[in-house]
Amino acid sequence: MDTARAAILDGLNVFRALEAWGARLYAGWAAAEPDEGLRAGHLVIAEREANHARVLAERIRVLGGAPGPACVDDVLAAQLAELGEVRGLVAQLDALKACTARDAARLEPCNRALARGFETARATDPETYRLWAELYSEEKVSAAWYRARYGELSGKGMREPRLPVLAPEQVVRRAERVTVAAGEPVACALTAS
Image 1 (tube, rainbow, N blue to C red):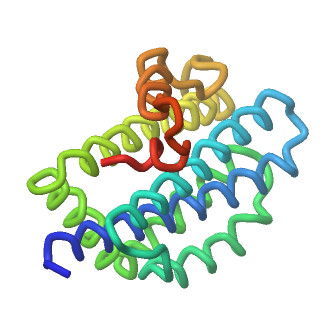
Image 2: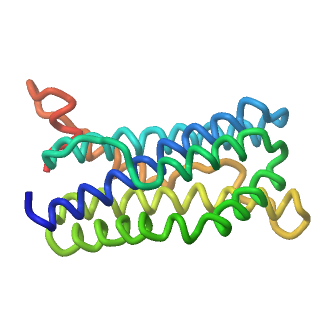
């Protein structure tokens, strides 16, 4: 396997592991959240993270790789155990920020692999780069919702947006990606280069 393909696969696998972790964390927070609006927001984001992990795993397979252990796994497992028991959105996000800062040095090699994969895809694999950029744009929607809720609940911000929903053009992009020609298996359309 060439070095460019290896860098892309490594970065995609790190991204996949992060997304799967996010899905588990936010679904766990939702399960314990008494506020219906916050629970719905956590679940929308958890579902998006799970979908991202699935799409990334499929892209890894299309490129000839296999999803597997990632350099982030041990750190994320410890963070999940630590953060899973935190209650209340402000406390949860404060704890997440503290974990991220505390573990930054341990995650730095993984962050470099993620960035290297993204930049290599930008230079050598336009389809993978486009997918990666689309997923990053969706991550910004989730982050904006968490920032807004944090600001609202801590008294430091505004009340918008109410739910972490994608913009119409992001939804259309997703739909276009899965337009299937007659007789073509859906899985092929989802992962077509």
